[in-house]
Amino acid sequence: MSGSLRYCRRMLVLTRRAGESVVIGDGIVVTIIDVRGDGVRIGIDAPRSVKVHRAEVLDAVKAENAGAAVPDDAAEATAAALRSILPGPAAAPSPTQSE
Image 1 (cartoon, rainbow, N blue to C red):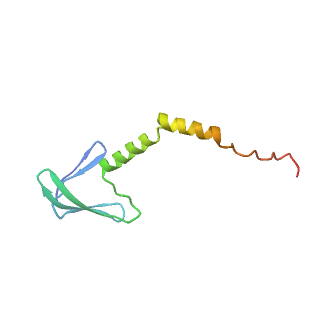
Image 2 (image 1 turned 135 degrees about the vertical axis):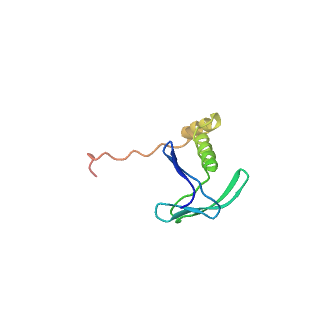
Image 3 (image 1 turned 60 degrees about the horizontal axis):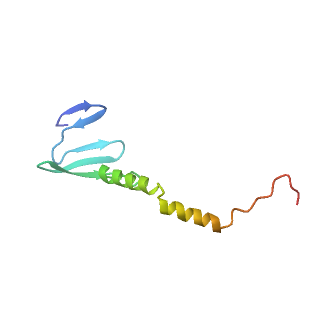
């Protein structure tokens, strides 16, 4: 294997050239496709069961989901209005009551 290998804070850091690959676990292959300036094109071959996401997209989705989970004043008002007009859940008979 050409290139260098070193560890950096529990992160394996490899030097690879275009056309060279790294195998991760069983069946995940990361191949360097092209290196231009400060950009690197990589190809990832992984089983369909393995989710592959760009970190910045995943971070944006998580932030959006966290923001959506926080109710705003309008949502609170709508929920209160619905609670006042909708019937509550029916009381279930207690197990000690006979039929």
